[in-house]
Length: 66
Image 1: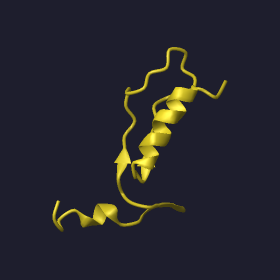
Image 2: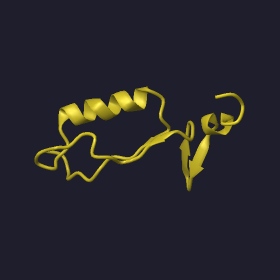
Image 3: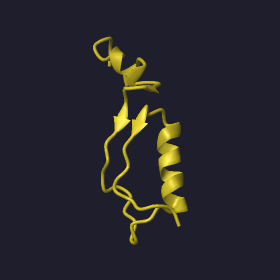
């Protein structure tokens, strides 16, 4: 990447929310749930995404937990 995009690895801020970097994953239909609820495999999927180093992850529309 060179030095052109180094700012994306710097701390970001949205209001009072401080992000460790400016990398984010937009909401997408990448993990559909048949009933619209959050399930354990969905939690594991997004936890792994977070461990990958993203500063912010938007999830699609879901209803409350089980």
